[in-house]
Amino acid sequence: MPTTAFATINARIQPMDRGERYEDPLIDALENSNIADVVGGGSMLLAGGNEIGYCCIDLDIHELEHGVPLICSILEAAGAPLGSYLSYDHADSSHRIPFGKNYGIGIYLNGTDLPDSVYADCDVNYLVSEINRLLRDIGSCQSNWQGPTETALYVYGSSRDSMRELLRDLIENYPLCERARVVDLPDAILEGG
Image (cartoon, rainbow, N blue to C red; front, top):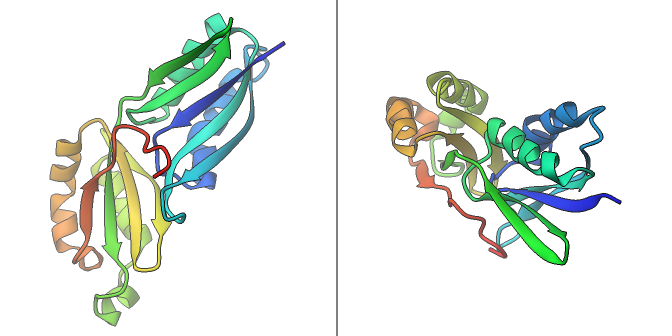
């Protein structure tokens, strides 16, 4: 009988992005192995109910000895941030295995207070492309969120300081980034809010 496990990933990531970045590589690596199966997934919201706080992948693990380290290493290689963990119960005890190396920053674009021409002439897709180009060796924009007054770009990489430095000119000079907030994303899951 398989062991039910949950990979809790400390990433603010939309369901489609979660599938592409984390679930698909895991499914591909586990295919035909009989070590584990991906059986579901979900996203948990921050307090207030509209911004994703973290995501989960539900698993059935058939071989704990090989499956646990393999799952953690695949998700870490896919870009999982610090504060992520794999949890399961086995032999009357609970286990929580940490994984993840990346740090996160959120770039919150002002969606209401800039001149109309900025929103008309600038493209958030261009901004994401530039972020990924500038960070190609150390990180990337994993997902985004559009709220009532802001659009957030969630950027994860090996060093917050390096990411901020590499993105400084872009954020200071691209008109869509005027009045943007750049914040450190938590290195631990914010349970319930």
